[in-house]
Length: 578
Image (cartoon, rainbow, N blue to C red; front, side):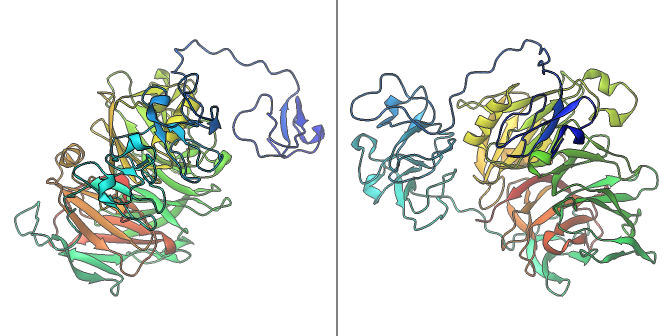
């Protein structure tokens, strides 16, 4: 712990490690702040022996390195993030030469170097935006293939492709990945139009007496701040800094928390009511978790803070024993905490072991090899996706709180292969390299029917991992998550009729959905808001839907006027309008 100025400020047996920069602190792990001094053991630190493991594949460096220049061929194939390459043949294995005219970012690589130097890198999929040349050079790369640039006209593209002219960061239909600003790319000549938000034919999962029409945004609510699908109604429950008003009279003892974010509904074990447990993304130790209490009729009867003193509680997820795990985005001080709104229990979990900008949490309790595994995403450019497997004994104590807090569990990290397979590595650096290459700034995550879904915010991509088969695919979240992916919808909704998900902020603050046929609907449009929608959750009977508009911590309750349920499944991922 730090910051210390002398040994006298450390507990017995510890000494103050004086530092002027990023020197390591013997006996400590995690990211120490530059120049800060920390208390460490006053004895030589001998690393604890670790059991032998099969080492993960050696991964190439991720910092840009110029190891060859000039004409001719390099003495050996260039590895990932090495240059200067002139063509794909000069790159090792399946790596591809990323051609740069200026200082364009190289996918999966960090650092900077001479303008116009070209580097070998991983092209995740055939439709990942990729720079292959400029002004017809190098000639062997022209005409350009799918999602390749920089083109100047259709004649620079292969048959069936056209040159998508861009002046900024306009999306490229049919392509994924981060395209270089202002560069032009070859795309499919004909793009099937995405079904736009708006009125759709009546879709009524409960046919008798149904009046709910998803996508027919004709029902105003809260003075027109929201436009609802026909047959819906809503009411505002909370505002940041104001006391929560109860339906049975009275008000809360504490005001509503600020910057409401990720949330879940947890059933009360006895009386048919439920809790809406909501994160606060306030910083500087002012975050935490606040909980609304509802009775069996959906009336608000309580509000309390269950966790305080944490920072930037952003996302999280439920456990299968009905508690909430909330994660902090707080650099080296960020961890994940378990919260039980029924008993008031809170504890820091072992889901992650080093500090980070952690986002969301999910579990898989259908793995035939173990009782359960737990997954956490990190909102960082090289933040690995963490898989935590508790020790077998943690499941057998008779106390559910021991599952995420007992010692002896293992952590491993997702590594994606270019052939569409993946594996779990014990090397955190291997996981960080894979994240940097394929899924920087991972956010929402969900595991549904052994399919793990998570989103890369930077690339605006949805990844689906088949946990049983060990395979993965990636699709775009632009213009609607699960766009043109009816198979994904079927896997997610199961016996439900509709999949609901939120939108990733900006000037679009809406709730969307897809039915089993993959049709896209806007369920609620936030005309009066310009802040992120989050905390989407449904009551145990599926008759109430809740969502938070983060700016003012405005939590709304929605219901169908015909009294029927929403026929809902929910994905804790985000859709991107642009």
